[in-house]
Amino acid sequence: MLEHRRAALVPAAAYSLEAAAYSREHHSAFAYSSYAGIASGHRTFLRLAATEL
Image (cartoon, rainbow, N blue to C red; front, side, top):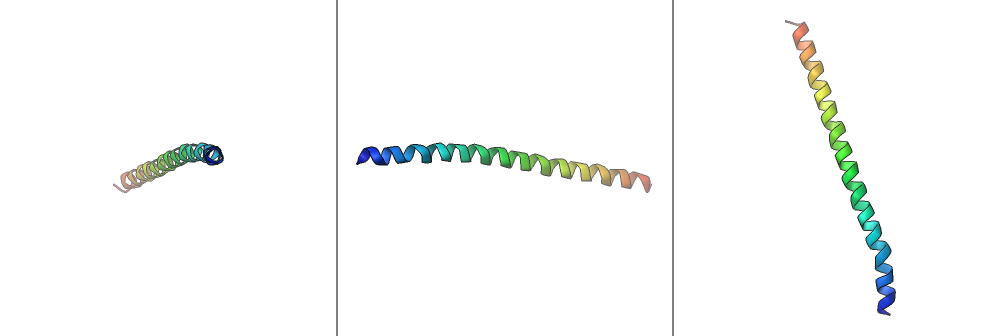
């Protein structure tokens, strides 16, 4: 009976590792795109401010 429980845990552990890896990739890509958007907006603001001087 214990072997059934152990066999059931193996796919769950593999899925958990895969989900954690996907989550890290997803969050780092989101953080990078957010930073790139902020940096782009900042450059646009500076360009507009310079034209009004």
